Length: 108
Image (tube, rainbow, N blue to C red; front, side, top):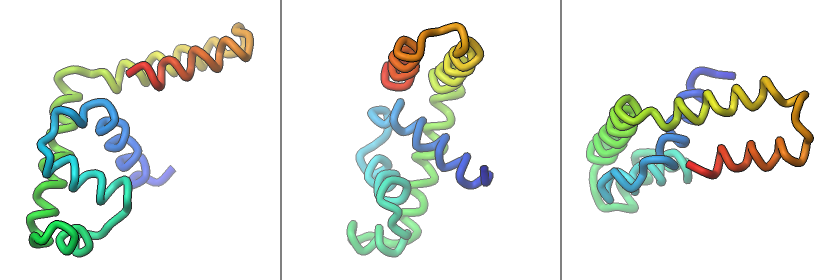
């Protein structure tokens, strides 16, 4: 998997966990860029701001998400749980495995 794609996936996962800890401007910038795939220019046009303001809001949102994860570690914990579950896949009935996996992914 491409490194940029890994970073994007990680940031989106962090956003899903911690979005309520971001400012409204940061949440909006993050959604527009990462979830709706808008460029800085498109974001600025929609929000009547500059490209630099949108870039700054997105940078601050990404930094804040990483800072929160460094302190709380919920994403890392979820990744460890999923890895442990994957290692036991052959020992678990498929329907139970699926429910456990969904629970870990959705439970955070």
